Length: 120
Image (tube, rainbow, N blue to C red):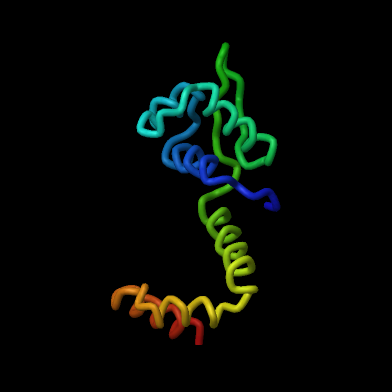
């Protein structure tokens, strides 16, 4: 996947990952706390369709939307982009920043140790 997904598009995707297929009206109903109208949601859905991240199926007079990519793929790409943008691809700099600024809990540090041990 090479198309960046905006924060608003990610919110729509999260809704579709939780339950799909959904109509645009159903997505609006699930996102009432964002105060988006149906036109706004349809705009986000259309962008995601154009980016080939969401598919749709016509059912009667409505369209049902489903994600074409899984959450892990989006997270992987976003993580990679963040690493490149902020740390010029330097994983050591990223990790040391989090550790040195005490932004990782003991539980998170233990989890990282476990992942590293599994990679050996």
